[in-house]
Length: 80
Image (cartoon, rainbow, N blue to C red; front, side, top):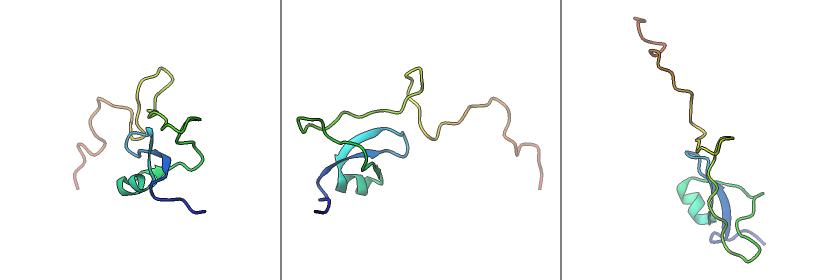
């Protein structure tokens, strides 16, 4: 049996890293990565709540987060 487009799946948002429950068709149309190894529903068949990506202190993080630096960009002062 193949996966139907409207089956609920667990997917990861590439911008925030959050895991959400969404239909397979919805995940595909929004460009989300389907996590086939994760359950999308609980024992009663209800969708699982979103799981945001957090650091050890519980603060939200994103995969694209980089350490901020107050120094000037590397290319500043260089002339071509």
